Length: 213
Picture 1 (tube, helix red, strand yellow):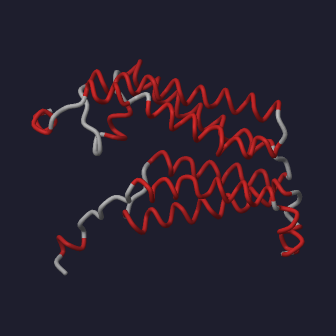
Picture 2: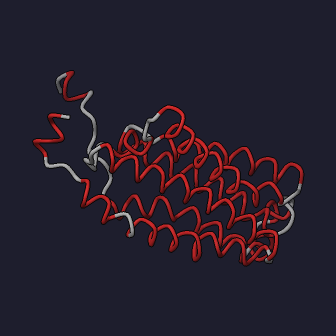
């Protein structure tokens, strides 16, 4: 194998594989939380973690780690946003387990989404740089107006998710909050993404235009 071949960037995972790697840890989190007591009975070492939310948190951290490793093994790279999310999951997961306080794992989505929202909107308004162009310029080619619109919308959406998380975890049961992460947040995100297609179609560039830009 030549040097050029050995350093060649691997093709990205297909969309179904990416979806599985993104939702897989959430599914593991829900299943481990719902069956935490049974798992603790089967494996006494898990009983030392505390209640079922703590068992779910531990499984969530492991599942996130495996997901990140698989992504790196296939693509030899990890996108910035999933990497930041992974780091935050580990930090807040460890705080949850060490302090035996579920507050930390519940507030984690609020902090992450607020960070993303503020970073995207702040960079857009103060530096006139559409962050979404840096994140998705590979698979999508849009004009500057399109990237600006998408960046603004995604920034607002992340702040919306932060607000929703705060409302849900403060007003609902832990089991409801855990399930909502998959059955509430994921559908809302998919619907939001579908509503961005008109912008992408309107401001999309042909290959010739993209090359010139």
